[in-house]
Length: 72
Image (cartoon, rainbow, N blue to C red):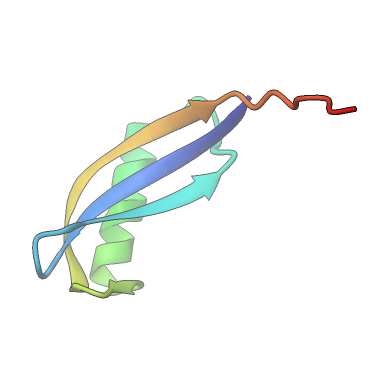
């Protein structure tokens, strides 16, 4: 099962921008995620087509299952 952490921000146009990272450390510490998102904002580490990231919207863990189909 593949896992990602998605950190969601709002940009200057009030649109959602998602930054995804593979294989998050578990258990996820909400305080660490919050601090990392604060750092992204304070250092203006990323920009988007809608301008700079200006605020945090949320964060989540996404899991997905991939099943290969055997073809003849």
